[in-house]
Image 1 (cartoon, rainbow, N blue to C red):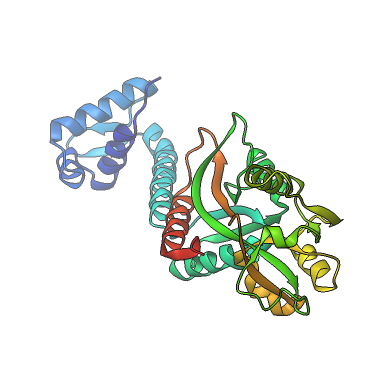
Image 2: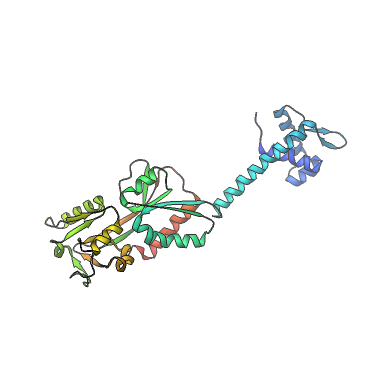
Length: 300
């Protein structure tokens, strides 16, 4: 059975107008086109819908089927309106995952602007460890992930967003706290608070390629960057931390000092599932993040 929406619209219009000619004017078709559409629908259903005499009136079958046809047309109209609302960001849900510290600093700034521009979009933010971001996206628990470089596999893709300078973080009372910059060579004897084993391995590789004698001695290993800052603040060691966390320096009684020899910048990416089209809300958020990154979020 091949029934079309055009046939049901013609059926509904004729029932409403009581005339093929009047219905044709309402739906912007010729009278013959409307008549043909109704006839095709009658043939497909195997019942007559109208008595065609001096006046066009519904048959008993037509009276019983008309509410069903109009319900289908109403549902289709709701689908069309819903799609329009999604496209125009009058409705929708944005699901994002990012590392905890990035979520409460850079991401929250962008989300605040996004919420002000699109107040009808629901927001769901998952703050995870850096190493969990790709997994959350892979499992479909978030549509977008934002975080530093990680292996993605075949089911997740990534696109570059920005790079962020890495700073040495020390207690506010540390001898290096007032410096405008410090070299890695000066930090040879320091011990470090590690909050991401993969990031630590990347740092070690960069340092080794610059100077084979450079290395980082681990004092404490934690799961979250906020915990790392707290441990630094109580004197457990130093940490290498993205600059966006600087706003929490006073909370944890620490200082952020530029690193040199070499300067290190951490690249951040947008992650999404491969082959999955982004929702209009996610597309708009990606565009907003890219604008923020272009305005200097990645500058030292």
